[in-house]
Image (cartoon, rainbow, N blue to C red; front, side, top):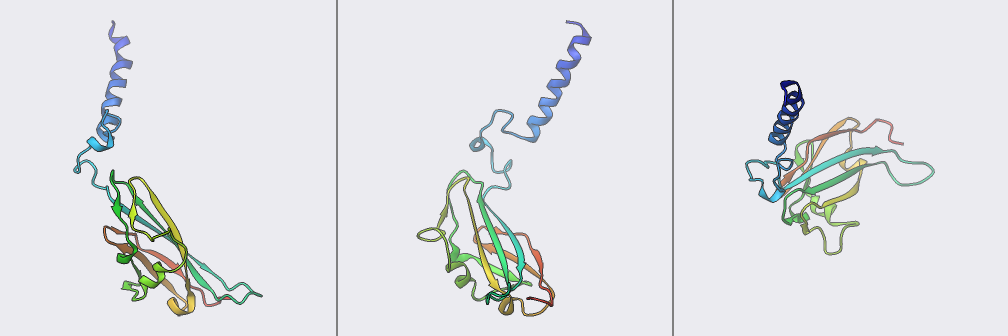
Length: 162
């Protein structure tokens, strides 16, 4: 084989070596074979999203902030995801009534106890704007629990809530 014919093979081999060093699964390893040092992000991961919802005349429901949550288990075993440890934080202060917020409303039968490997849990809660966001300004929210912490995000509550 001439050197000209070898160039594409060498380029392909080099590309495969680079890709396999960046992603161990491509190199022939399964997720369970990858060591903890190679998978620093295993476990529970939380996401949070917020949206201010205006009062909608002629209805009587007050303005509220819709907070959407997602929890992902990217471990290879089920993990404790019990809402008993969950805290909602507004402007760096954990809400005393987090248990009531997370414990009421729709959820799985028996509550959020265990999240299976690879599974996600998604849900939303509406927080009364007058109670939790009394001033017209930007607020910072985050969500944490045993084994996870969401990023901190911001919602702006306007002067005109109606």
